Image (cartoon, rainbow, N blue to C red; front, side, top):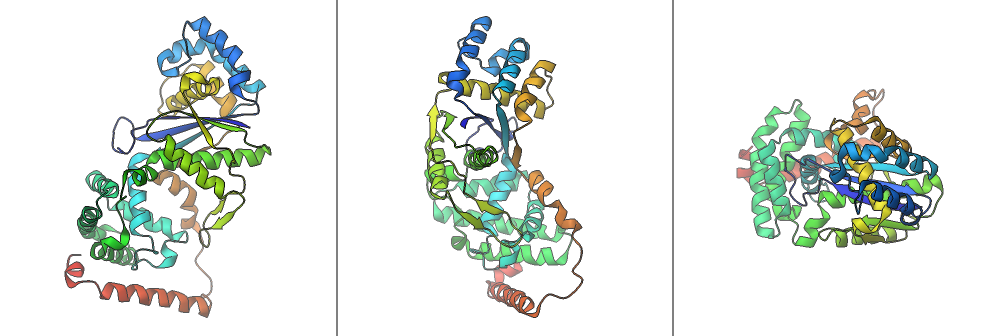
Length: 381
């Protein structure tokens, strides 16, 4: 299996560009190397359009439409499969805040089961409710801060700004949990390690790397579903993130063959089919496969944004996308995945005594941590 990866909407570590709120990754897979089998067709199409490269953004709907049918026929004949992975950037800032501040391994005021079970997502939505755009930007600014002392000060100030908003949460238990966690983080910011420390660490929390995780996981999924070995992963070359993408791919390659449990009721991390080959970073004008994925990703974005397309280009898109997958990192995506929690029935019998004791001990520890906070932190709520 041969894989070709392109991205669109890249603003790096800047998450609040209103013109590009979503980072898109397009993944195109094929059974044969497209840089060989597609090149004759693309050479013909380039000549017919009088261009050196088929760049969708330059050609536009009108000129692409003239070659859409030929590309669709080629896609069907060669079983090309397109997947689109998205990261909603403003949501990523909130999710990143929650994952760092409400991690029960770092915040002693968060019980284990409110982070390592599906209760995590209910709590995440409650925390996200507290933010407006200004506070979300402050959260991301503090998350990117490389100086530990400044990051700690910024986190304390942010938590204290959020605390008065906890009163808007609809239920007493959420207000209790969230306020306690924010108070603890405000009093112990160095324990949270909210800042990134250096530039390389900042890249690791970028939407580009979060989206590239999805790409690698989707490649593993497609490889397993088709029972095919990944021969090559060709990624569009760009200077800022390629090194970090390569390091991430190597990290996942080292985990190949392993499965991991996140917690009861949570997804299983399955690394058994992670690709063994490292990504190859190639200029977009030096790969027929990258040319093709650029076109399909451009079409996919127009469909997402409700912009006009010709029937020929929609046919081209579906000739590839009907066997691919779509996924996204966003609050909307998490809500869609976990909304079923709201429909679960109430327990019809008490928890086993051993579990009751366990949860009682966790709650006792949480209350002890809250009671030991400085008086000014408690009063600040």
